[in-house]
Image (cartoon, rainbow, N blue to C red; front, side, top):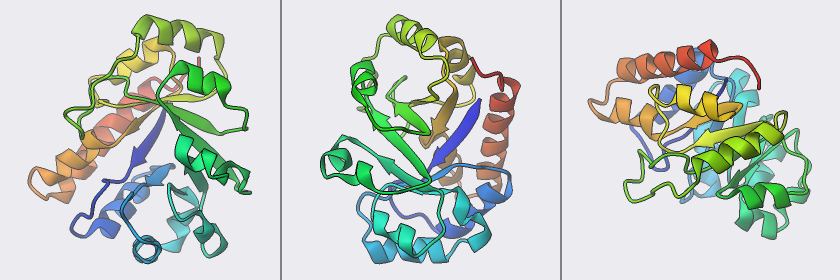
Length: 207
């Protein structure tokens, strides 16, 4: 199963180094999602990460930075689609959706889409899943090659469940960053990443 990691939404100490460490460990898809960051703050973050890893980074905001950095691409949601961002020429395009109907209505070609929250969120305690597991499983069985990624409440104990539902991969945020925030210990972050990554590799079969 594909593993994607999203950045913590707010600033963390030595964050650029933490991100670079995950990329060094073999992470291929890192989503730089900082909703409140200015363009300059996003640039500062990118400048703090070795350029050899930029091709693994996907932007959630300030898409014009594609003209300044050789990044993987962009990630869109319903708001940015309505603003016309889906017309931007990018090597990689992915989307966030919260219902099956939203995925079915998407007319733009994509590399993958997030469906969330599959389980109750780890990073947002009040963000509860309202999705029907059986409906998801039936939907994914019909859309086998469409690269749909599970997001929301996923740690190493949930990967088996998402695999059985038929997802092509998982996106992790709270489970990864909480491991670091507990003691501000980079080793704990790396250990958590390796545990989750190993579980994903054990379920590498594409449905």
